Image (tube, helix red, strand yellow):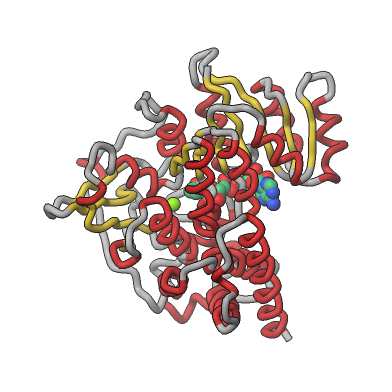
Length: 391
Ligand code: NAD
Ligand code: MG
């Protein structure tokens, strides 16, 4: 019996994780904690069905509704940041980190501190604080497994291999909603247009990040943090079909590709069953029917986010936390209609320029406090940039 908790259970990744738990043979899993946001009806229904110990909403004001929805179920109800961390710290063997944004960092660390295996969908944790995540796992005997499809693919490609023989890693990108749009049209892209993905069904934020390529920019940094590779050995390749998720290139010229359907239940299930491989309810690809797979180099003019990620890695230190925070604020600005699609990258770049002009800001040691304070600084700066532009 594996004890599992799911942080961000009501989201896209969380629901896919619950789907796999639900399909597992009776008695394979025991659900400890489920967390969510304002969608307390979903959270309560899932917690009842899974017979969870506790359900936590991130928002204090949602507690009465959650309590009411759980009445008579025997499931505890709790709310707020402290309760999230407490839920993540409840003894469990496996914890899914599927909160979106930097908000996922602290609960994920709490799970590692109890020595759990952390299935990390929350790429922001690695971008903001990769060294802290790895060190926390090492110190407390926890394990971090990648769930992002590209990183799961790389991880699988490295099983049994000599890490020293890895020459390069290639992660693929669908190119997002606007990959075939003329450049001039991008400035006018609307929220609705940016919120539909050609291949994957995901949460709204990551879908927009896919259209702007900020998602891939975060993933390049995530690759560096997970696999310890020099940035120049990490490549991005546009692959519109989203069937090859990543490739690992070795010193002898071999390129090992991971091919599979665009269904997150593969990567989630791989982490859930690791180190075993068990059957998963995903489509089996018929390559003869698919016929061809295509690849092309990303266009730097179309995707300034990729260039910014390279600068973030070159500057190093805590720059990743600022990059992510500025991106989150810019994304909020786009969702709220305060800035246009192309201005997201401009806001992030301007925020980073301000940050890097202040000596020593990024050089503090990787502690949670330092990461969160740089996150707050970057949010403030990015908010100011947006206000100046809107004025
Ligand atoms: P989502 O928006 O569908 O769900 C997010 C979850 O986090 C929800 O349960 C929500 O209630 C909760 N949440 C949101 N803000 C919160 C906060 N401030 N505090 C606590 N909880 C909060 O997102 P998603 O698409 O499932 O993505 C989750 C994470 O997984 C992200 O980091 C994303 O980049 C990553 N990821 C997602 C996919 C995908 O296919 N959806 C693929 C790869 C990686
Ligand atoms: Mg991904």
